[in-house]
Length: 363
Image (cartoon, rainbow, N blue to C red; front, side, top):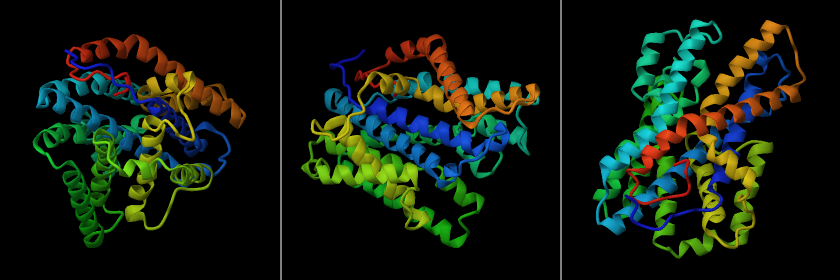
């Protein structure tokens, strides 16, 4: 069904790998009590959440670019095929993790949420971000909130790209509309209100930032020359490195995510489309980790809880470095096995509905 030569953006698997490893390492630290290790403190700087924003920006970028190419080549967008591709890529692992979590609750390995029935209903209907906002998540799959947000974005996105012709205006307007809505709720209620938490966990504006980047590349916009400048790259990488080892940009919590995401987009644009990028993320290790990054993201909390349970049963207290390595290695191994023997058959089915082929297989 593919009608055009294979599209490949170098370095995108590197971005996925970097984001996935940050999430896992930070979550190990955040669950130090559970794992019976000392906390080193860096896990409190908020970078785990910002790594998820990197995923959002990347998703908005790649999905939008592929849709733009499809619309250019076919004069339309096959929305049914788009939805089927998303279903075959996202749903199998998503629902498997829910089943595993139910089993873990039954085995008393993870605690059930206060309202298990409501929580399960929300997860089943791809509203994990709503469960997060209501604070009734399943502990072993709390990260699924971001999958819910992405699925809601995917629900509307092909229709928006298909119907619009003024892409920049449309994408910018959606960002503005989202921010205005969030601001109204922020002012009238409180940042800690459940309504605000739910709205803030849809993150459509972050994915729209990625979409703007896709249009800049698609249209070969002159602003890319500015974004490709070495000093702009150095600033963006400097901000990311500072975010990892100190803390992300913090000016005002209401727009911190958006500000950081702009710099993530600049990094993504440079590593994937700029031949003079100052840092290349294209190597075998990053490509491997990036390819299985969806599994890493889904499974890592499950692995943390199972490791914690086993350590408790055995009465062991391991060195902090050993625990980090154990969780990382088990997560990577589980994700590789899952990718090879569980996900690939669904990916093969997904390929039957592919209009524009892409080697960036995680999408």
